[in-house]
Image 1 (cartoon, helix red, strand yellow):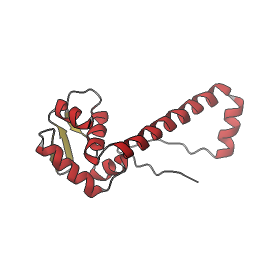
Image 2 (cartoon, rainbow, N blue to C red):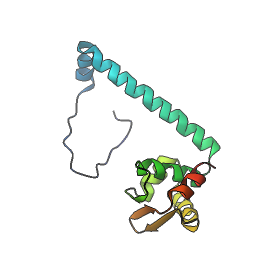
Image 3 (cartoon, rainbow, N blue to C red):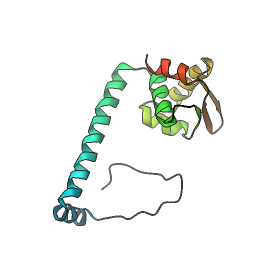
Image 4 (cartoon, helix red, strand yellow):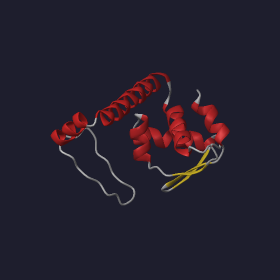
Length: 131
């Protein structure tokens, strides 16, 4: 059983491990179990923060926040994400994300063209992410 579907943007070497084998590994290497537990805790914290965002922020602010997260360095420039991915990550429909990007374009925060979102003004994007 899987709780999610992943799509790689580049070639990936992956190994599928049966649940029973993984449990046996965790029992035999307690340090690994702690690493997995830390990962689960982090994911729960992120999920809680996202639920709070859904309740408190509009789609434009959520899109702005995700773009800033993807920018990482804080220097602006192109961000590699599709409208569908951004919609899934913000808890919004693709149409709502398209409208939010139009708002951010009108503010001069981003420039978009087919298949590309570029952060034009990081400060404007930060201000809109905070509202």
